[in-house]
Length: 141
Length: 139
Image (cartoon, rainbow over all chains, first blue to last red; front, side, top):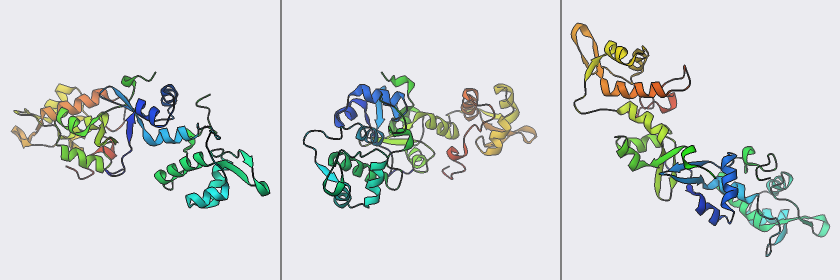
């Protein structure tokens, strides 16, 4: 890892504010090693990307004001293959909330956007690492 | 509640360089080479103290340093691993004493000795290959 692609760390409280999540939830995730944390001069800092990955899975699929869109529409808007979006749906990261015309699965556009951002940041790596996948392990139960 | 003392300790690069008497440029190059784990906090580069300690042991020098023979280091530190440190280049001979004895820096030997005493895993390399500045061509 070079100087250019260093992981970004932010104070835990700041991360909680930014991602609109209870700091205690982040605390639990740190204790469960789902989020990488370090100490700098006595302050707890957390890996920004880890927090993004964890919080995207905690967002309520249909928060008020959210838009329901089909998988192919997500793929079109994010400019990614629809197979990728289907895989997100199959793995439970982007659950189908309703059915549209011709049985199209409708998903949350807010969550799809958040997953799209993580995809951009992570490149070709698995979008949500197995160790941080709530579907595979129960972290916040 | 997460306790800061239980977490891996990091420091801003400049602060670590000053605290451990390391050239900041060398530390930056060590980060770039992956020998020192690092991250970014705001605009600052932060470095893992555990790795900085390893770098410090490899470049440690002191004013009015004492030159001692390898045998004397073995006697003072009570470990024959010292010869391996010399072989790996971590404890280079700086001069030759009586009867061709290789003389090394006592402060550097002490720094390596401290690492050795803190080592928890018996038989593991004192300075892992991926953190060995000499192997990486950084020193």
